[in-house]
Structure formats: C-alpha cells, structure tokens
Amino acid sequence: MHKTVVDNLIDIKKEIQLKINKDNNLLLTPKIIAVSKTFPISDILPLINFGHLHFGENKVQEALDKWLDIKMNFNHINLHMIGRLQTNKVRHAVKIFDYIHSLDSEKLAKKIADEQIKLNKRIKIFIQINIGNEQQKTGVDKNNVLDFYKYCKSLNLDIIGIMCIPPKTMENKNYFCEMNKMKEKLNLTELSMGMSEDFLDATENQSTFLRIGSKIFGKRD
Ligand SMILES: *Cc1c(COP(=O)(O)O)cnc(C)c1O
Image 1 (spheres, rainbow, N blue to C red):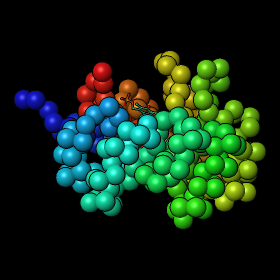
Image 2 (tube, rainbow, N blue to C red):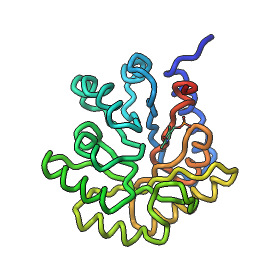
Image 3 (cartoon, rainbow, N blue to C red):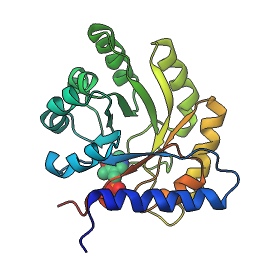
Image 4 (cartoon, protein in one colour):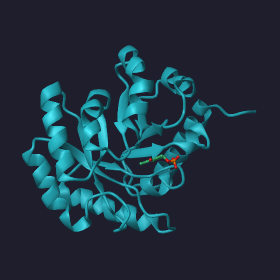
C-alpha cells in the first residue's frame, strides 16, 4: 500500500511517543512542523484536513503564493519561516508568518521590530545559533548569544527560543545537548531542532519544535 502524508505523520508521532514512553526525563511531546517547501498545496491539504496545525516554508514568495488563501480559510494554522530571511522581504514575512526561526543579525532584528509596529502584529521568534561554528553557515555565534538576546529584548521582540541546523555529522546529539543547555541558561522555553534524519535525537534533548519535511512529504527535487 502506498503511504499518504497523513500515514507518514502518524508513523512519526508513534516513533516520538515510543521514545517518550521509554525516557522519564521527557515530559513534553514536541510539536511537529510539517516542512512543505517545494510541495504544492494539493500535497499539503490532506494534513490540514487531518487537523495538523504547524507548517514550515523557507521562502517568503513561495509562502505567499501557497498560503495566503489557505490562511484566510483556516486561521488556526501556524506558519513558520525556517529559511534565511533577507531584510527586503521582512514586511511580507511578518504578514504571512506566525513564527520566524532564522533571526541571526541585528539588522534583521531591527527590521522585524519596525515592520511589526507598522503591521500591528507580533511574531514569535527563534534566534538561530551557529551551533557547529561553521564558517559558511548563518546563525549567531555561540559566544554572542546573550548580548544578541538582550538587544532583541530591547527592541521588544517576542523571543521564544533558539534554533539550529547542525553540521552534517554523526554527532548531532552533542549539538542538541548543547542547545538545550543554552536554552536553559537564557531562560527560554522553546527549542527548534531536529529534522527527518535526527528528530528522535532532538526529541531526546528536549526539542519542542521538530522541523520535518521529506519524512512526511517524500524526497524533494
Ligand atoms: C528543509 C528544511 C527542513 C526539513 O528537512 P528534512 O530533512 O526534509 O526533514 C528543516 N529545517 C530547515 C531549516 C529546512 O530548510
């Protein structure tokens, strides 16, 4: 039998539940962001009709094209911006998204703060951390996180947690563990980490938002 996107989501939820049942330290079930980038709305609708609430996109224009109508009809849906955000796209991003996971510069923070005031909307925001200290990767440097967080608070941004895309190694567990400690230090509640290949490791380290694409929708082109 061909598995549907809903079957895939249910399977993932079962795997997470098994993990949680085995580990007494895990008290919260992480939310699943269904990362629907590149997939048409016809592939997404079955999940919406199933009652799924959290969806992720990584491009502002694609999000506007796909979600503007849907969000008018289903206003309980939460749309997450998980990709790199350019300052000239912030206005539209603030309009269409409920969460931004990729805040990583003062310039972007200032721009989001300005547009929020103009649009009278307050987005929930994650600070993206360059957890692997990778030169080519975006994200705030680990050593600057506290200062950056204070700056964001001074702009009255609603920072709810931190997010990372760890290096492609076998040792993601260590990065996830480090992220969890950083979250505790900052006294934040949310952790955005874990994708199709490592969502159970992220769950084990108290992730609260898993960002899962291909394991739900299949391979992207
Ligand atoms: C595409 C993407 C994901 C989902 O990746 P999968 O491996 O398909 O689950 C998660 N986070 C970010 C930032 C992405 O760009």
